[in-house]
Amino acid sequence: MTLRRRLSAIARALGVRWEGPDVLLSGVAPLEAAGPDTVSLCTDLRQAGSLRKTRAAAVIVPRDNATLCQLARGRALPVAEPRQALRRVLELFAPTEATRRGRAAGARVARTAKVHPHARIEAGAVVEAEARVGPGTRLEAGSFVGAGAVIGRACRIGQHAVVLGCCRIGDRVVVGPGTVLGGDGFGFVHEDGAYRRMPHIGALVIEDDVEIGANCTVDRGTLGETRLGQGSKIDAGVHIAHNVHIGQKVLIAAQCGLSGSVTVGDGAVLGGKVGVADHRTIGAGAQVGAGSGVGSHVPPGIRVVGYPAVPIGDWLRMLAEQRRRTRRSSRPGRHS
Image 1 (cartoon, helix red, strand yellow):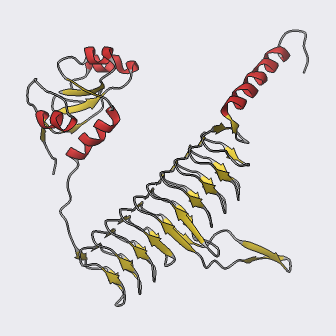
Image 2: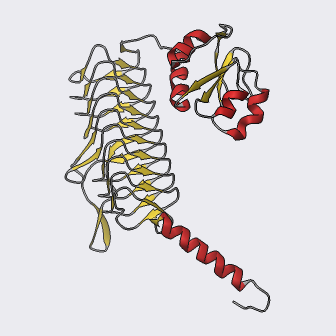
């Protein structure tokens, strides 16, 4: 069912005074696709052409951009933080799913599992012996919770996600479809001419408010624990190996790979497809550019990029020097 909201209510939620028509809105759309019953967003002067042509009833714009405010005159919703405003508006239009509790037909819950009566266990989900599932948590269809695993309150475990028995998950954690938590790490010992698997007996601890995207893998510790800190957000397709410690409020974009025993400090950011060698430390607040290969420790608060990753100032100087040499070598009469 599509939710509809009055434009005046949207403006109130954003702390904006609205004096135009109080249109009944059906949702949010890009400038080019917006209709007279939708809200849109414009944050960049490069979108000025689309802003002029849009049919949106109202447009969220940055309060400090006079040009965009002028172009959207009569339908502007000027705010200090447009993306935050967009998030609030999207939440207002998001359908609220009726709260369903209990176990669907086809769910399999072990007799000794401790599942709160206010949890929701969907069809095909499995909860093994001695596992604990907190109130308000939703186990989506086909998900698996291993023996002895602990999941806190108000979590969402996506379709066909796997939470193995070594996992300790806090409150309000989101796990995307197909993600596997708590598998053994890539640990082998070369012995008698063959690679022998190293047994893993450690844990995986996921603190409150962590979100993990679809099709990720996060391994358990070998002897100790792998830990994801409070409020960290992991994009889809990320691999986190055994014994990794990720601090609080860390952002890791898609397709990153963190080798064993890596430490990532609070507030660090890793762009897409970053690879980190084992036993390396990325300091608090550091930023690693997309596609970089981290082969040495990254100090707190700096930005690195490249393969191997170096401070961004060094990388830009090396790039400039490389271009100068290329230009010199390509001049007539010069030979490489």
